[in-house]
Length: 401
Image (spheres, rainbow, N blue to C red):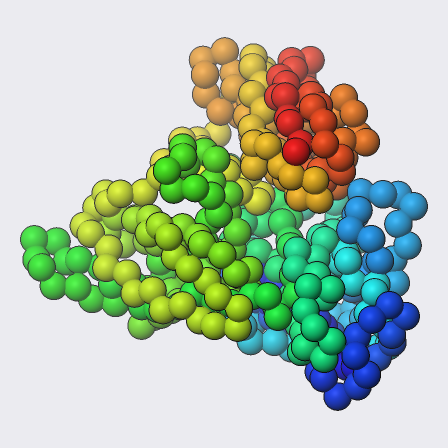
């Protein structure tokens, strides 16, 4: 069987054709590596150039295990403008032979020193990278090849979600890189697409809206939105069209939120995604402010909608730890964020933070990025996650089930 790998702006995709023997343990085949992307939700950005060094896979899903064996399946070592790869578009990164059993986890190695973001007017954007140089980003495969019958065509998608990985938190035009990726076999995935229109002020007419951020969330709409989790993001084009792909079969909440327009955001619940199908969801946004939950957690940090990110001074007086999902299942990724405040209650950013986990056999750190943390749930149990900054600590009890 042929196995192709592609990267999309929310995604690196490994595709498999059915022109070979059935997939199974020990099977090898030719693997192609492609690049694609999900839309970047900032209308002022012209380019997001990411330097991809290599792509690796592993046989087990525990990306936090230091003894994990990684096999290189592509080594493009080139810089790619992710914004050219929106809505499922792909670019070939490489091709190689691989054992199909070695795709339980994926690692994307990037070089931040060779990566950059450019404004629409050509000026470079200041990006706060966690390191200058080589950085490895890990994800496990959410929908396994083993779930499908032999001969089923596959695409292993590594979702590099730019919309969640770059955050504007300093109110100075700069962006902070807090990487968030996922991986899935798209034989068990679908998409949602449609047109977003906005209501004109003092009018009943609606017109297509560009630069509307579209976020797909998982969770029970009857629960507090703080328990919802971001799955993937997208953005409408000049004609108001959007498409968010590589979603596992299930029921989701879809949020539409204008980035610059006067229309309000809205949440649409019970959106059903089916394998291999695109669900059509056209949205008419009310005039500002609309109806939209603001407390949802997600990859790269919690939502900052409506949050005052004005630069503040003074020492850290309190640390509050937020974790999403609040009670992850074994095998899940989880995110954490250290909310720092000064004595006056103003939010602080850019301060050094150290993290500790009371039992790493239950919850392990996959990556630490200043105030943000990526975790892997390894076993059922209860742990305490602690963040410390300038001698002040805050903790959160996490139950893995």
